[in-house]
Image 1 (cartoon, helix red, strand yellow):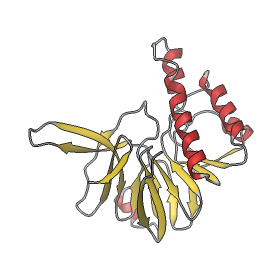
Image 2 (tube, one colour):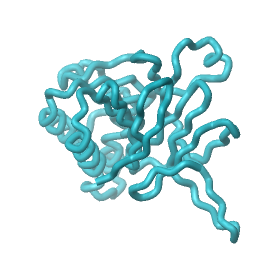
Image 3 (spheres, rainbow, N blue to C red):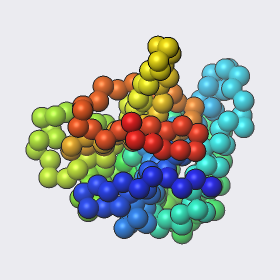
Image 4 (tube, rainbow, N blue to C red):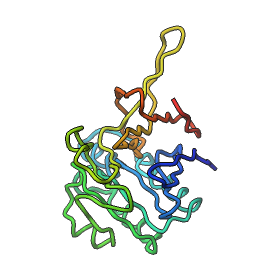
Length: 218
């Protein structure tokens, strides 16, 4: 069982989880970005032999987080399902039925191309953005110019952020990370079949790397 790392942001208490999600304590909400369900089915449909059990790993992980933290709501910050309908949608629908009492909301990302009515049939509401308390939730990161016009702190995903660590012997590794700037935070991709991209960070940013079952300040 993971414990996560406490982080206070905008007077709110967040728990940064090594499963690449955030538990917002005041709202009893799980927040996660870029799950990319259906990506395995998408590749298999194209004839690429990806092991099918891999498709269930992220839902199993999310199930563990639900049992551990007992959220009232789950907020998906885009790219919940990777592409169009495939065999993985049925598994997702069955999973949703298990947790029908939990409110689920999706901020649509660029990969969320399935017609919204299918999400609504699963009692998942869809939005272009969400505003809760001090936070504005989007999928795409905002430019500095846009952020200067914001009255809310932005939470988003999309770019699968990573932080590059370099050892004494010049060996390096890029780890998924949470990246908190002065006006915007980018969440790591929850989906494990995604990878990450090393970001440039400002000296004033709060960056937290993720390795195994641990979240640590960089």
